[in-house]
Length: 561
Image 1 (cartoon, helix red, strand yellow):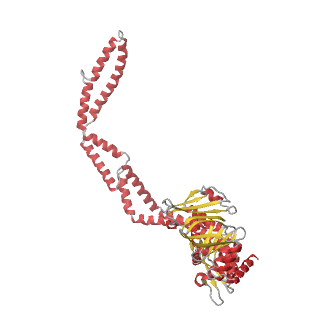
Image 2: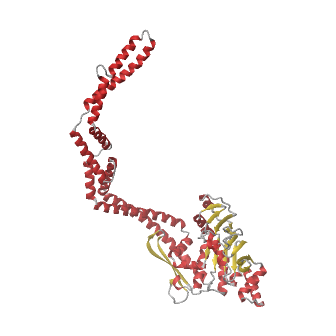
């Protein structure tokens, strides 16, 4: 429930600071006084798009960009919002939840819930659960099938059943999507089957081996430089292993000399041991060099074979737009799987077809349950709507809910149409096609009254729902809104009709004032005496007569009975 509203620097409002109360309240004021401005401000709290032009004064006294602030306090203690606040990690104060929107003249907008910054999306999700603003354009909802269907579902309390169906429908459509994707893939693959088989055979015949290319490239490098390698190894072998001057022979002789003096020169023993280790390692190296010299030789046939194989690998890599044999092998595996899919296509398609059929059958079963529930609820809606519309000045009303079969969709397999006739002998037709503006207003009010008891919406605001009605009918509409505001709920009606204004437990007036700084819209709560004057003004116009005052008192008195 809305407890308090604060607006600063918004359009024509300099500052508004006002309390609201449970039950039925009314807002009156001349056309153009600023009632729609207040609704626009509340709309921003519900997550509507902001416009920098809505900032009343673009700059403050110091020439800095000014800020518009809209803040509302709500009492949510009876509405169980704990889960929403927990899911969005927002501090929860059920008795004083504060929603604030800030807008600067530069176009920046910020949203807060209990002083915590939130996204506009989060604010919109919360706002939709706090306030329902019924403006005249909402009457157009009667032209939309999904609105009519949602009314029936609300009355039938189908939320759980519909969520269950929706989950099944999502699974069904996902399986259907996978089936279509597979069929499209198979069709594409079938067209390319011969080409894919050719590619696979080509790669398989090549007998690719990961790492082969690197080994061949290294061997090719060795063969290309065989002469230089052999010359260098020959020189190294000579320097190491010649009989007299070779390094191995020279180290062996040095070792012998050191060993000969070891008995008389102890240090020589240590040096001899170290030199012996060097001699062993050097001798091993010399033998390996000698062996390599024997093995390295230029083989033109091997060189040709390596070059041919490398040319084959390079050609394949270029053809398949890769750079390594590993990637060629990966491509080969991909083709193998594609061919395997083609070969197994019939079995995969049949399995998916069975899954789709099974999931569709589940959806149809759940849709049937929804249809049955909606049909039962439709009869209740018809009876209640007739009961509500007759006192609202449509004595010969006929109202029927037609439930037509439809293709499976996220809402089930039904299309709901509200059929309406206000006069005897007039055939039933869709309500949006045959009802007048005043009749549509009464139909929408009756629908809202029905669903308000099911949806625990804290606050409902009616913006001139009384368009096209007057007199006793207006009073009946006021009584319905008064009824909706019972039980701790809050209903606010913006009205031009005295019959409705008189039924309000609380009465607010919006006025436009001329000030030295320009035109300004203000809103205030009227005292009992001021209410008499305001209703008299609504009855008689600018010149309030004693008779109008008496009529106003009578209206107010009647509303209290």
